[in-house]
Image 1 (cartoon, rainbow, N blue to C red):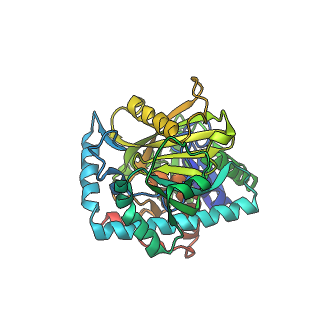
Image 2: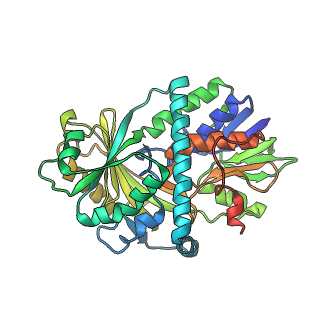
Image 3: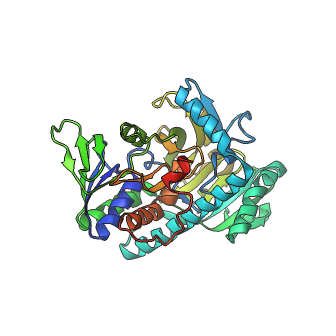
Length: 412
């Protein structure tokens, strides 16, 4: 089939690779000048059971604590307020447990697919194995209990360890920073999302996929005469199918077709700095449970990411959120990174649906397919979402159980 993909972030590029590998004629339209320039650009690349927290875990009970990992920023639009109301309705305990299990299933499948591709292609990118969740206090340990029970229920390996064992696993942890204990996640990992995405783009191109950068899609029409309209082009382009992987822009593209998606932007931050002294830097992913901040090693750089904001100005950084990242890095790994004005500070909008799960598969409109709404877990779920979408589009049953990821859950 002749297939258009809208968006060249991690989700769109992974989808392009899978469809091209299946033998389809693929064209990817991206409004930026390069792939992985927005939400896929500079996040931690965490993959594992702690990489997919629901927004309820981030927001409660920390909404009013300072510094708060989750914040509402002014101005808040009517759409933001409506989304928060829908999100609140989705936070029923029984539904949250089911959704958490679904996200863990998708993450595990995606991790397995990434490993397959890494071996097959290969994908030589910066990565690390294992993660430590650091618990500063007894309160942190108590709040982590539901997540640990979810890991037990899913049969995922972890161990609760004391400070001595944590320092043996990660010797660079600051000796002057006291903490209660840690959770060791041996199967978690972190990898450079943008680096791997660009390698996958090259692999997709080798299989015939075409990437058209600086191409903004303004309109799409469903099959049987599916078309994609590009800004400054007078004639729409025909395709057999269109896969929408355009993040927040997906909602505006689909709204004229009668499909209203409750997507909102949850903004996150990261800082990336060159390593000054390798012995003082982490060797694996380290997560601060209290501040909801992750610290990862990216080759000769260290990346610190966290924060979850709704509202505010898209192009205006929250200085307090950035300062919190520097503080957490200094608490755990002082002297590890060079801060002398060379650190890259980044803010990105992560598109999220109220129930926290992405939309995968048929849209209900003929010829229009969806792979969007992954929030901050895009890289953790990208390879699995892409493979499942390619299978559904080809009429095959995916290897992963797709219950709970379809458009029908928004139409009940």
